[in-house]
Length: 429
Ligand code: UGA
Image (cartoon, rainbow, N blue to C red; front, side, top):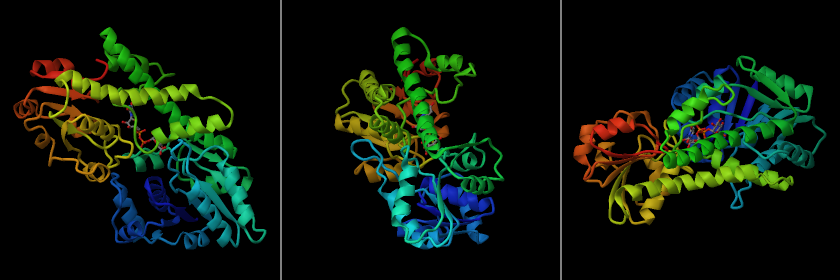
């Protein structure tokens, strides 16, 4: 099938490359000319394990091309995936101006049937509005369909998630749209759930909000654990054996971040509000998440006293491991709070330093894990990169001014750290 993917950000680029891998012909379009130039030259604009290989493979076999002319891409395709950004507006609602643009372009260039599919996370009823926008702007009476096919991939494991999903959701209102979608995904073995468009849109917001709720729940439990002298990791394990609960997404930490959860939770609160429901449960999820970041800062202060003039070595800036993404990263927000209180920060992240420095001008970074610890008053771990799990403890002890470690990701065993001579602080243990 000929596919246009409009917007080659995280989801769009992975979608383009994976559909090309599945044998379809894909044109990825983006208005960022630099990004397109980089892609056409064989590079990729983001860090995602395995992505570069499948992009270059698709390009090499002529199944994947990139353009900055979205209208051309739409014109040449039978199926159009909308993968543009839906960033948060100041009031928390989703900004749909880019989605609207794609709908108008589709209306403008359509000469025969096309299926327009939303993959970006959008508020419920956006499909109806996209349909209305196309109908209003289309010149002739050309048949088309709109469908919702939300994406559930995670950054860092994006390709695996796309090709091995737990489920695929098709929100459709015609048999034809359903047939096209089933054909597109025929080589992916996963439960395929067909619903109406509004339901599919809600499944995405409900899923991300539920996962965010799990994280805030365990973070709230971590606070109780500290007051009660209990261990949150054991609680997660004990709860996780119950198949109805499941262990995933019960890791206490500095709060959830990234470009999806924070924005989707606040958009969902907004959507519910507009539909006449006060989603107070989700408001609490958001509140616990904000408090958790401040709690990490308080922990540092409890460990070394007021931070003004003190040097803190920070490990982790990305919002999670295996990505260079620092958008809405709790690590970066915590670093900002510490800097505001007068701390001297030196930070290291395997992939996220460039992005962190872009959004936090003047941020001091080190060349590796150990470089940031030299003569520091404390070491603060904020992202759960695998390489931070097996650090050379005697070396850290020698490098630090005082042997203080605040581990906001619970990467180390408290008993072992104590034995190694550290004053060790973690979350909920
Ligand atoms: C999330 C969802 O997991 C994907 O299914 C979804 O497709 C994606 O959003 C999206 O809407 O595009 P992602 O943002 O890549 O994926 O990251 P996650 O792995 O879900 O992690 C989100 C945040 O939660 C991170 O800050 C992570 O550190 C935190 N987290 C996760 C915890 O604090 N504890 C956990 O137990 C799990």
